[in-house]
Image 1 (spheres, one colour):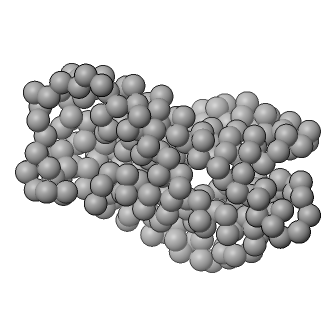
Image 2 (image 1 turned 120 degrees about the vertical axis):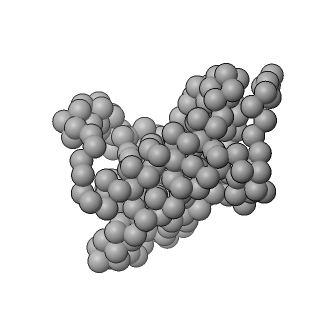
Length: 228
């Protein structure tokens, strides 16, 4: 399984979390067209707006990942990524708060004001989706930590693009149907997500151990120089 395929499945399995967190905002955006096809078109634009933002964030963080790879820190990046994801998974399992909620709200406030302004002035679903993609989100941060393991800004952008595409199917169905997934199902999925995070974290750790196992832990050429 390729890195981009992993990114897609991370987005797919985590998209029920996205419905719980971003769904209310998506439901609140007024439709600009009448009829089912108009609603589907609006919500498709909204979700592509999110994907544009995720891809942009991936491209930007890819510059950091590229510098780390040039420095020969590939194994360290993968091991550190795995440990961070495992820690995040265990924190959700045991309800340990790792971050200050007040600090997070400071980052949330400016983007939230822009989104409210955009909704009020009917900026369109694509613009609101782009703004929504920049809202602080732990699950997006998790994907970005994976993207930093890629070797270039373009690779990181593709990783985040496929992550966004993974969130697309269920988010589109949920925003079109509004009541597709009930709160009970979302709660069950959210309980399962930390276990998925821990498995993913251990995969990054094994990957960074340079065990020369195809797909699972391929050999890393630490002397490789990236010129692209």
